Amino acid sequence: MRSILIIACDFYLAGIYGRKFEHDGWDVEIAESIADGKTMIAKMQPDVVLLEKDCTKDIVDLVRELKGLPTMQSAKLVILAKESDRDEIQKARNAGADQYLLLGHFVPHEAVEKIRQLVS
Image 1 (cartoon, rainbow, N blue to C red):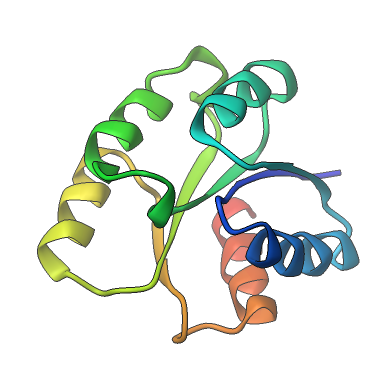
Image 2 (cartoon, rainbow, N blue to C red; image 1 turned 135 degrees about the horizontal axis):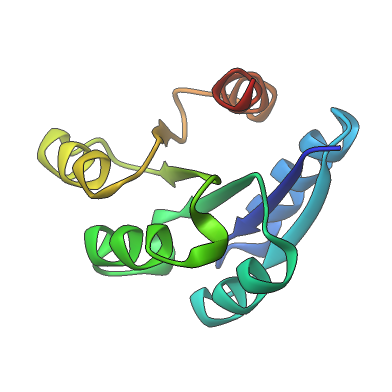
């Protein structure tokens, strides 16, 4: 069974995505802060980390930090963001983000499909 850790400060948003992934057969964990997320990454070694960009001011540094964790070496890191700043998207991708999904461009079930394709 694939596992996903959703790091989101918006618990409502995390719940919506969490239910969609569970419905698709994923093992889902939710962290409400970056600190909790880092602890959970070390414990669960997820296949995917879905990170809500609004949880941090500097997404690029956080992407580098998370991708540098030993338990993230084979995991995919997907950023979920409200805005589409092309420069920031490219910087996050260059730092190690595997996918950058824009809220409003994808409904949750489409995001599940995109992430399923990413790990298959």
